[in-house]
Amino acid sequence: MTTFNLPDLGEGLAEAEIVAWHVKVGDAVTIDQPMLSVETAKAVVEVPSPYTGIVRALHAEAGAVVETGKPLIDFDVQGETAAGSAAAASKPQARKADDSGTVVGNMPTSDEELVETAIAGRSGAAVRDRVRAAPAARALARRAGVDIEQVTGSGRGGLVTLDDVMNASQVPARRPAVDAGARPSFAPLPTGESERLRGPRRAMAHSMSLSRDQVASCTIFDDADLHGWIRRSDYTVRLLRAVAAGCRAEPALNAWYDGESQSRRLLARVDVAVAVDTSEGLMVPVVRDVANRSPAELRNDVARLKAAAQARTLSPEELKDFTILLSNFGTIAGRYATPLVAPPAVAILGAGSLKHDVVAVMGGIEAHLRMPLSLSFDHRCVTGGDGARFLAAVIKDLEQPD
Image (cartoon, rainbow, N blue to C red; front, side):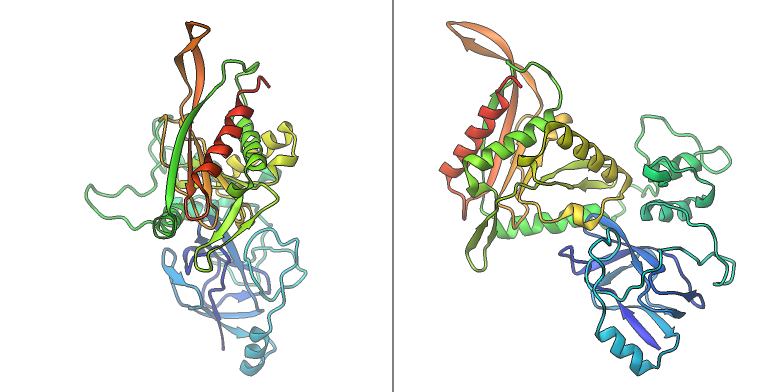
């Protein structure tokens, strides 16, 4: 018998929450067949089987939080002795560079297509057509009693999303109708009952604890006058362009800092993590190389990442290795804030709610549309002058007509 431990999924957390099992004890599985969905940091990923064999034991149930390196599942491995299995496990093959989903790290693999073959109530040999669905959508379908094979996907290439499953479950026979404007709640808790943080909210707690413990935070505020704008749109794209301008003017804010070795690394490419508010919590996908992309490319990428964040289909690669952060919280409410830096990055720019302010112009007064800005930075490695020069360049770029 061979025991497979939870691998390091490469997202900085020492544990992962099991969203759903796709196999059960007694099932025959093949290499690369999805075994389970787990949630770690802010992505739901599928863990494929590293072996071909028979499932003999599951060491945790759906909803449990498992530490990295702890036992996850036991196999009787086909065609191998226990010693041979252990040797194979000690020398895993690296996954191919184009493996876009699932697990970050080294795991055995084959060239077979990932196809789910285990069906509840049938033998492991029965095969069904592949249904393309986000892992979180699969888990929700199981909880809501929805047959995912009968759901029509609205995502790219027919991908079944969370919204598709929720729409399929909102029929009178299964679930009472809800107000169209209400935010869905799958498991409301009685008033006063404690709720353990899970998924994105747990990841946010981890990230903000690191910020509290490791960052000497300082925030400065100012406003950008948008009165000269020709088009009142694409605020996020303009902010991304302005962040790139700020990094050109003051590279010290596009950097990583290692507090233990007291060393910083200035980064040439500007990769901006953009905060996205979702019903599951805060998601922070990364827009890559913003300084060298056209407004249309940035616009399309932002739209794609926001849609993926809402559908919980972001890959781990789309959530890591940012060089600076952007929070456009003003789309909801609030003028100024003290946004917190997520290490190892050293700066985050917050954009507040747009307001028409009275400003003095040539001895008179006018009402100008202005954007409040809040820049937080790690004062261990960024000086006040560095921050002020960055913010001045951001404002100068934002105040350009187009």
